[in-house]
Amino acid sequence: MTVIYKPKGRALEYSPLACNLYIGCTHGCRYCYAPACIHKSAENWGEGVYARDGILESFDKDCAYLAKHKMNDEAHRVLFCFLSDPYQPLESSRRITRRALEIAKKWAVKVSVLTKGTYQRVKPDLQLMKDADVKLGVTLSFASDKLRKQWEPNAASVGSRLRLLREAHDMGIPTWVSMEPVIIPDEALRVVEIAHEFVNYWKVGKLNHNREVEAAVDWPKFRRDVKQLLKQYDCAYYIKEDLRNAK
Ligand code: SF4
Image 1: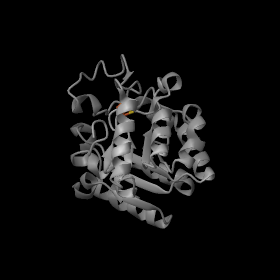
Image 2 (image 1 turned 90 degrees about the horizontal axis):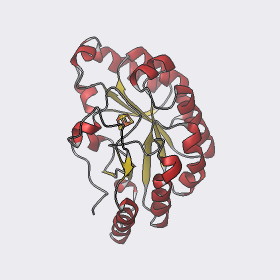
Image 3 (image 1 turned 180 degrees about the horizontal axis):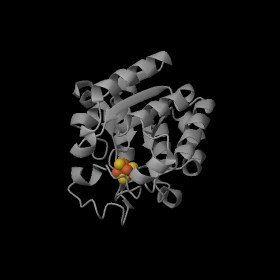
Image 4 (image 1 turned 135 degrees about the vertical axis):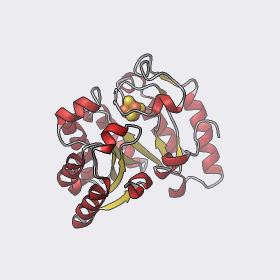
């Protein structure tokens, strides 16, 4: 396969397979690891976002391969995307993600979407997601939109993300939240309080690569608190290895 790949390290805890449809991202998250992963400068990461050359043709071929080898099953679900957001502003005109979802549907390849895109941008694809057996994930670690703005300045507001999750859930689309990176524990716990009724699955991970902020958090306490809360609401969840081992 050429554009569908098996993630390494921590990323493998997210998904058995992944595909990056765009290069670059305009959401401007302060904790973004994506440019470092592909040896690009963090300063220019939001400039000149583009869809990868021939991405849809290559994705179609890779999906055909998965289908031919009977790998279009749950064990081979493909995540959109690790190194960009599939619903950043360029998607409104390019529609690369939508067309990739159509291709996945054609080959019955299973996809999981992870986004901080706006409700308005994702909404037109919800019916397609439902028809294509997509799981829709939203990154959400802040309940306060003021804090969200500080850390994820150009991404969708908290309200927009919650609206998207609720509507997708009401339509019968499996929803999940990537509560990573957790930066302020009380904010993350508040997200669970607010969204537990319309989120099917939670993935929880801590902030990394920021020693100063990390050192201010009592991670074992947060781990206990979040597990207790998720159990209280009978939520399915996964605690990422870094948080499981944090001292
Ligand atoms: S949405 Fe993802 S790729 Fe885009 S800036 Fe934020 S962390 Fe980086």
